[in-house]
Image (cartoon, rainbow, N blue to C red; front, side, top):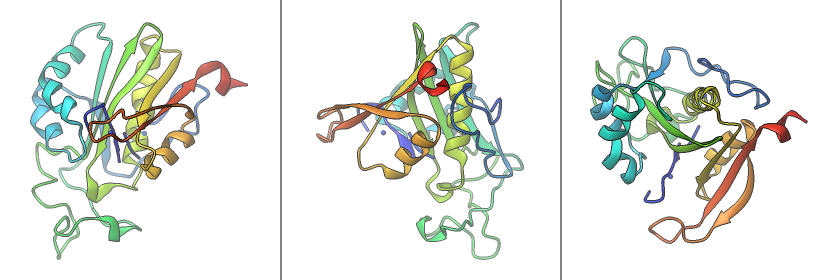
Length: 215
């Protein structure tokens, strides 16, 4: 799943598993996956994620340095296998690209897993009292396993701790999997940005608003 900045699109997340108060129920995520704050040295692993927007890739080194600063308004998270590998088999195996699993074990191959592996990443920023989900990407072979929701819940919690009272993001109208995840987390479609993406595709504008979700 991917969410995009304008030139490409988030997807399938307190403190490791709990979102802001009033959001949808937290998702426990798949076993064997941990979410932590990304460090500048994680840039190469995150940049390899398919679905990460081009604008995020260009600014990744700078953004990770910014996120590492004290009192940063930018949040960067990385999801990675707890033990260096993760079983890629899931109920929807047919969605995984060929070659993502080794025939003998079903574990992700070296392109996905390893000491510097990233199975997902998320970036967000607080502007005044609004949290903006800038990008969210999950390794294609592991989509549909709850990693995106795990990242989303953690990201919203971090942005809320930094003063955000509402959260917003853009997503392509055709990204139905992402829309389902966001709606389950408490987001609602409140607008549309015509020709938002470079290919001319519109973007749906989604918001999570504190007061509305608590009623």
